[in-house]
Length: 190
Image (tube, rainbow, N blue to C red; front, side):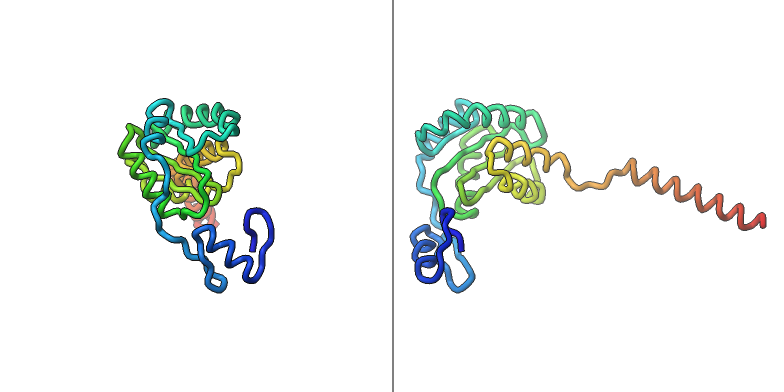
């Protein structure tokens, strides 16, 4: 089992998981549905300012903020926009608790889609997107270690909704009908 980039086994693994709010029982891990303990007023104020919020004043935030602002601004012009994006450093909260936080922050802003990203989990809620679109897009988001690229992947996943391309299907059907007609005509003529 990997914990914080190192491999832990036996009692060390269980102790480490319990310390991170995710107790392990055998091979299963259960997330405790405790609320995320963050300054929601600060996050809401940051979101109102520029649609991106950080849990802490980590100096690394200054390095990633320009890319996040670009990605959020571009995303806000697409389906589901405007977007809000929150970066947490807290680990172990679990996706359910992050979803609750995202919902609270969404209701406190004029965003239509709110994404909350922590190092070990992510959650998104929206007044514009379907649950299916959100869940599919969350997978695209969490696969990207670069947070800004994750936003881009989230938006691209929304755009690729999985709907059939009706024009292409229509063209294939028309070609199939013509093919059947030609084969039938050729067979009858013999």
